[in-house]
Image (cartoon, rainbow, N blue to C red; front, side, top):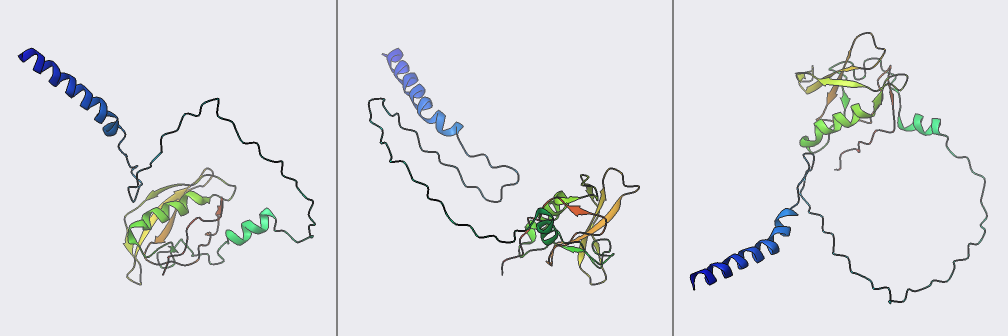
Length: 189
């Protein structure tokens, strides 16, 4: 009698584990960069039998269309518009004239600095390497983040300063270019 109860309890436990096991092993694991946890739901696929008829669609007729000759921007002009070089020699190189990448949410300021640095390139498209230094105050009593920046071929590292509290349209400091338009949006009001 006892062995039959024990056997039925073991069978019940195995059934319960078989049922709950896949549920616990498929839990959402957020990445370290995730700000919010939104689990991804993938609905189960349905097996379609081969006897199910498929619907044939009528072919689509493509009609010729008229095109107008317009002046299109070249890659160089788009890059010039989106990667504007600063005319101020102190832009980014002085704590009092930092690169302003700030937003309304202070928590994403360091991420915005890194996105800027990952987009920045040396004058001949060299990859930029950087190391964050200790924050400091500028003359306006704003905390700025200095980054030591270097790339292949540079004689000695340069220091770029970032302001994560304020935002201004992003420019490229003298002596640098950008790989693509900076993917940093102005803060939403």
